[in-house]
Image (cartoon, rainbow, N blue to C red):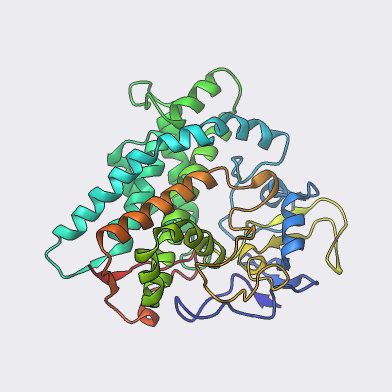
Length: 393
């Protein structure tokens, strides 16, 4: 069996195992825990699996004797670790902040932050600047932290712990677990500790109020906040940096965005399709026997719906391996599907569009400062992505 997750040779190398997109039979793989799983890669099968109530996220964390994804897995009863009806209840508490009105109201602040960060890059004395650490990561981190109500002094430690938590094979399991526990402890202290320390606005304050009213449990609350912070900043920053690289590696693509700003929206959609953060969604546990494509999955077996491979399915996408910012729209699965569809998808798209607009306006002559194949790729992590993007402004 193949070992999963797959690793890329470098940041622009082709997807491993190019025969997998569109395959009608799931592929048997071994997860970092050593347990086997069915890797689902055909678009229609991935979409169905993500919406199938017989595939349980909760079971992957708590089923006695069941398979686990990594040796570091611990119970996480948040948005990514619950099934309906508990998932529905918790998601409903968070949903108002992610509706179009509140998300749109954040645009001016995100735009101002993007330009402040770009001002900072211009002020650097070094002719080479790192667009990931100087722009993508702080933009996504501050935007997510503002949504939650996290004090700015907390950002560095939270980012470090999140990086640990997301490790699949890059760190020892005990370090990954320690990062997760540190995040949980920190958010529990913010939301449920001393009222004098509790943020007065944002998701932390909102969910603390819901807990006081008995609408969210004591273990659920910090788990939800961990999910929102980690998913909110790591995936958006990784996708933004990957997308900037894809655009800059072919100067004609960058020039097209400069000349035709209307391509920003399609470019973001193509970046999400082509460089979804991580090659998969989190695994599910089959609670009964079911068919996926041409395979029978037995109760108690793990299933991994692979977003990245579904987004390369030739039945759905013409020239699926080509990065084309003029591509005709087709619904990709970058944000998932079904009950666990990414709650922050609209905010992520807004951030990406604002970021690309700001960079193209401010630095139309932007170019890479290192050969693309030498850039570090975050193998061994759930989100993947380029971890440094040196550029000339």
